[in-house]
Image (cartoon, rainbow, N blue to C red; front, top):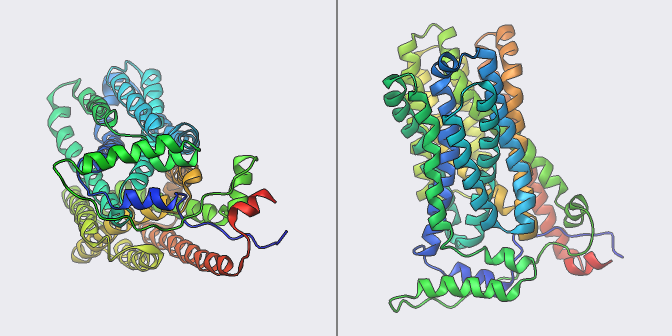
Amino acid sequence: MSSVRPALPPDGNSPSLRARLDRLPVRGPVLLVIVVAAVSYAFEFADMLALGSVSAPVQKELGISLSQFGTVVSATYLGLMIGASSAGWIADRWGRKRILIAGHVVTALASLAAALATGQGSLLIARLAGGIGMGTLYVIALTYLVELVPSHRRGAAVAGTYFVGSLAVTGITAFARVVVPSGPDGWRFVFGIGVIGILTLFALFRLPESPTWLKSRGLREEAEAAVAKLERAATRGGTALPEPVATVEPAAPAGPGSPATTFLRAGLVHPLVLLMLIWIAQTAIVQLMATWVPTILGLRGFSVERSLTVSTLLTIGTLVGSLAATFLAKRVQGLRAAVVLASLCAVAGGLLGFTGDVTLVILCGSVHAILFGVFSPLLNRITSEQWPTELRGRGSGLAYSAGRLAAIALPLTFTAVVSSLGPDAFGWALIVFWSVVVLGCAALAQLRRNRRGSQGSAQLSVRQLAKD
């Protein structure tokens, strides 16, 4: 047997199946898929911000200390990590649609439980369960979107879902400012709004299972029926579809073995490790920008009002960036673009972290936020498209869950770093984490180039190698 094992292209679909999906217009069921993914992102993004909005009233009304509330926050991130890491494995076995439905049900019920909490224990359990549900939504919604939306529309679709998620952050902030001061139970409405997500089930029940997943499980007739359903919806009213353009995209290696062995046979262990490192760094950056900007500006002598103004501008910048990404999706794609964007973010972030001039803070912070709004959906697309269909759920889930681990660990360490280095620690942290992203994306690009070279020289197909 040859020692050369070529790695795989990023999708595991038959030529006719993928080609038929790629010719579908973005309306009807395909548009509904995008809407479902966007709503899933919106609830995950908004719920994370809701914690900060209700901290003080929750502590007061439930009689819990700041450290006890911190435990609740940690439980939420632990749930996110569990949900992200496990949902992908389950969805690769049982299907995207089923697990997406389950994620919405768990998230809605957990939101209701959090709104009705009577103490730290009940709130902690509700938030842990909610984290599991939201971690599931984040991974599976994007997986479902990537597998059903036409390939040439994926970039704009992913960016659009991220924009809706960012918009939800602004919305939940405005909602919290209205309802939290309204009375002692105002915070319960902030948690309870997640129950609305259950309405997504009406859309999900109308949608088919992912045809590419069905094909990967050997359910050929079901896969054909799912594609045919999408085609019938697209041709209602006499609309004709273009002829499919077939592209050969091999599947993951078949054969018995553990999930770890499957990744080894597919040559995807190195990409998995790199994406996990990238997501650890990216999540740390998100938490730094969302949590520490007002604190760092306060240490530099900024008033509370000015610090909040800067934070608001950064939120708007992220919205602008994610909106721009929907229009730039065809031009800004791939790992080369990711390296350039991450490098520019490192420069802007470093300047933001080291300066005390209000003009530079606003300028550099806004540039960083806009670039980050373009980069984030690009990274989500790169992560999901890295894997063949058979491994997409678990590969994406492992990468995302590594990022959630960073969200748990960072609050425990960065406080000590700031105490030691002062506000400059913020600038150094952004430079370090963005450098990890840059190097990770560059290494991933090199792996892809090496993969193409090995595929060109190999004489055996992937399926033949799997039988050896």
